[in-house]
Image (tube, rainbow, N blue to C red; front, side):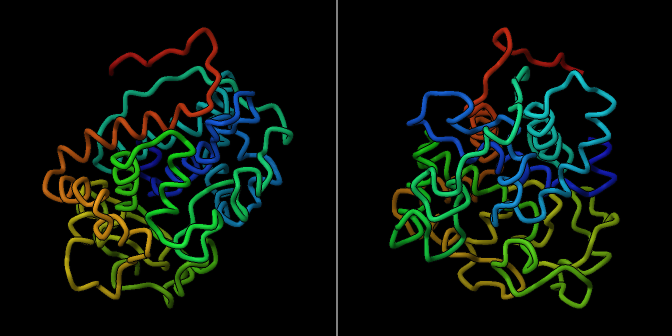
Length: 291
C-alpha cells in the first residue's frame, strides 16, 4: 500500500486485475481456458487487446516485487495489487485469498471473440456499439457480468470502483482527453487535491475522471451520478447512466449513494469474487495474517 500511495498508481492496479479476471466464462470448465485470475494478461496477444491499452505500465509497476518475491505467482501479485490499491485509497480491506496458479504461457490467453463479443475477450464496453450485440447499456452489462456469475447488485457495486481513475483518448479512446496538462480537465490537471488524504501527490496530468477526487475510494461515483445535471468535466457513459435508469439496477444505485458503508460491504464481496474467478488455488489457497 505504501508503494501504491507513493506512485499514485491505484487506478491502473485495479484495472489490471479486473481485466485479467474479467474474461472469465462460467460456461467453460477447463483451466485455464475458462479465463479469470490466471495472470494471462501479461502475455501477448492479450495485453495488446484494445481494452488493455496502457496496462503494460501496470505490469511494469509489479516487476520489482515479482523479482523480490519470485515465489508469489503473477496471478496472485496482480490481484494483490488491486486489493492493496482499494485499501490505499481509503476503501475497504478486501478479505483476499491467495495461492493462485499462474498461466504458464500465451496459450492461456482467450481469443478476442471467444466470449461471444466482438473483441477484447468479453470485457465490457463503455458505449454502443456493444460487442455482445446488446441494443442498450443495461442488457450489455448483464450479458457481460452474468457470464461471470454476478447478479445485479454485484454489477452496480463493481461499477462503483469508477470512483477511482480516469479514461484517456490514448488508451481506451472513449474520451477526447489524452494524457498531458493541455488535455486535462479541472480535476485532472496537476496539483489537484484528489487523494483521500486531501493531497495531490505526483501523478501524470490529463484524461477525464468519473469523480472529482479520483484517487479516493468512496461512494462519490454514485452521489455524483445522482446529480440531475451532468458535470461536463466528468465522465458519464451510457453504462454509468444505466445504473440509475434501469429499474432493477436503481435500488442498489440508490442504496450505495445513500450509504458508503453499504457500498463498501457489497463492493468488498464483489471484489473478492471477481479476484477468484477462474483461479486454481494450490492446496486450497490461504489468507494472509492480520497485521
